[in-house]
Image (tube, rainbow, N blue to C red; front, top):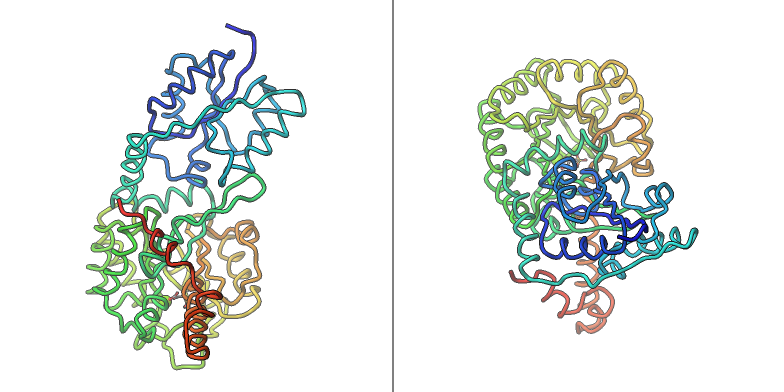
Length: 434
Ligand code: SPV
Ligand code: MG
């Protein structure tokens, strides 16, 4: 064997002949070290791994030709290359284009710093391997696997982001949109099934008019085509006697959490604030609802998160904090604090004061009106979940309206087609048949 050092990186939990082949070729070049990506990184850039990093490291270590296995904490090759200075980095040629290209570009630059070399082998295209990956991915949509993933992600990442989804198609956007940024990959961690969006898409007001059976249909549509965890906007949760059934139904289908708001009577959307009559529930009643929901819960992973409307209804921070304490004591797994101010100050004050006394409960924010705050700032302050609650419906409606107006104005579709519509070919192939 040559005295050259070889490095390659692996994330897979489904080892197949293609991987064995590339390891064999890499080992022929010298002493092979394999970097195994951590669970957080795999979940961020690919999908939630079915096997933990430790398991995957053990499997890779057992493959003939592998001399050493190291944990790799970043998708970028910077750390292992600077530390090990391998003579060769080995990779499939699938990263020449696509979202991994910037990682490749950086890797080439790093190798050039000390005269290392990138060796690429043709990526194994094999329908069997694709089927294997599809089967592994489909495991992730199984209720027992999907349900617990929200808690897991929050524990691993500290803070996660959720995009709203109100149809199968918007679910696919929340599931599949990926961007590359400075050698890392960004995608949403989960989905929010908003009552506002689920009502609006049906042309109905956001007043709990869309009933639970209909909400479940939406959830099912989204679940059929996605794998990411789902948080349901449960409005007020309805009658406590009904809420206990809701909790069980949601657990059964694999929803990860429900957020219920402490309002009573005819619910109106929070962003109306005090412009419309809205009644906050008593602490006692709402605590009873939370406690009964927790009692009905069958699995350990499901979460009931209490949403506090004190700031929306201008009752002040002290009222919000009193309620937060009571709701957590009643069993709530977390608190969503809502505000409709343009400035984030009152949310920040609440977060700071709540976190001083409670470091454990999950804290959720919905920065629809205070939209200038960066995610990093929320994280630094102790927020665990940031929800983009209505952005896909708010962006699709203007596009549809412009299209309709343009066709009316032009007496034909050509102009609208050119300006606002994706090509027919693209829409036909947007959802491939299995
Ligand atoms: C929703 O998305 O339906 C919400 C958040 O409840 S908000 O519209 O801001 O009240
Ligand atoms: Mg809502």
